Amino acid sequence: LAAGIEELVDAEAGNIDRRIFWDESIYNLELERIFARCWIFVAHDTQLPNVGDFLTTTIGEDAVIVSRGEDGKIHTFLNSCTHRGNRVCFAEAGNSRRFTCNFHGWSYGLDGSLKNVSRPQSYSGKSNLDKSKLGLHKARVESYKGMHFACFDPEAPSLEEYLGEFRWYLDVILDNDEGGIEFIDGNIKSRLKCNWKFPAENFVGDSYHAPWTHSSALIAMFGKQPTMRPDRSYHANANGHGWEFGLDFIGNAATLNSPPIIDYLREQEAKFAERLGKVRSRMVGALSSANVFPNLSFLAGHNTFRTWNPKGPRSTELHTWVFLNANAPEELKEEYRRGVMLTFSPAGVFEMDDGENFENCTAVNVGVVTRQQQLHFGMGLDSKIEHEELRGNVYQSQINEANQRAFYQRWADLMGAETWADVPVR
Ligand code: FES
Image (cartoon, rainbow, N blue to C red):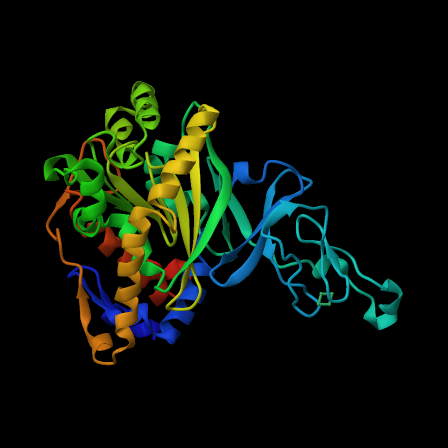
């Protein structure tokens, strides 16, 4: 299967085989070659401020605990006891001193190390336990400006190298002098009956869908479609991470329909420009969307981060957060929370539009003839440009499929590679 992956994804021509959204065998290889070896976002620093704070989530389908240890660092380890494999934590988030297994009472510390077992006298002689070898299996954890990522592959490049030039773009939202960003309390989880790649590729580059899919919502809100000028908008990508954006300020944030949010962003624009330069300052509130490979998506200005967590080839669990500059007024945080709930939550006007499309793009592949056809990703094949400020691979016009092709190219490169050393640099 891995050897034939280039026949499934021809990113240069823009042809993609539909089986990558449906087949169990491809999905199983994805869990091994994408999720078990890439850097996966697990938590923002502000979600776990105190020693003992933890949350549970998944990396691929591996259940993990993410916790702040007594050393003050963030640790990530499997939520599965080394005795019989039972879950050791059932809560979604909280504060704890230990994670103790329900089954026979083995107890683990905040860094996943085995601390105690029940009836220790039963392990004597040849059965003597070496507790140092029986801790919960740990992932590497590295961070970029408050965002913590975990990786189960010891051979993977550093997070810095993995993000590459995309760090320059991430700074648009992460590198501020307003105390950094804060994840506003509360994480919404919902299920979509779709393959995880459809929403990820939607955020990496698909502004093409916005004026059509969201037509009725946009007309109800503004009386017209948003303007996306080809001469003032771009696709940019690096290492499969991508951001599509215009340079007309306020685009995304306007859909939150909140004058205080627009005022705040306008006030901030001069500060952004001083810190980041003119072009990136205009990306903050412009019409845009982005994805960090494989499954962390976000909207700047609109201020939502989300992860698309695979639950089989036809099911995805969406985790959604609202974020804002940490020093922003409390009322504004509430305003943002309300705005995102109205737009990009399971009950939000835009998310409902999108979910229906993602689900049908997946479900239709039940047809055996349908599944043998290819999908077309050929828009903007000759749109690559050199730009004096923008970094990475840059393409003119946000109505484009350049970032989607780069996303699937990265996917195919990883799926076809035995080890990280075999993954091409593009
Ligand atoms: Fe956890 Fe036995 S399965 S203590």
